Image (tube, rainbow, N blue to C red; front, top):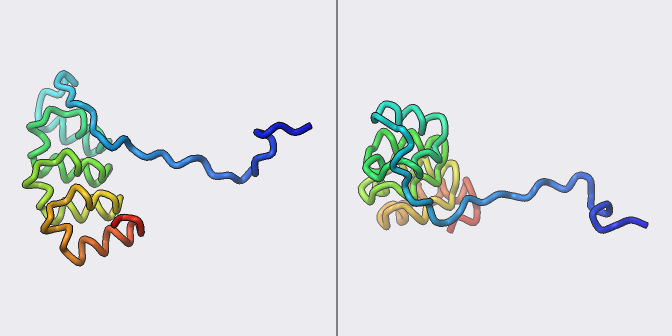
Length: 124
């Protein structure tokens, strides 16, 4: 007798893991002593931006390094950086859904929208 688990197709892909919609509260004691250390950390793992003190969310170099690895970092970027075309394009190239965190102006930009849709046809 086969149970339900053994009747699954062996080629079934693993489930898709979607990042949480709300970023975690910033952690202020990560031992990050300097901007250089933050840049190094986010360049390795863009999710680290979500855990950095908020002051780094407005630092263009830090946010750009982070979204190159983890486009969803755009959601915690400052409003000014959500209007930065290079940062937004970098994020939506990875994850089209990041379009929703871009400024209204960039959400209406044809090239940005097209890039998001190419990345993920459900981006709109």
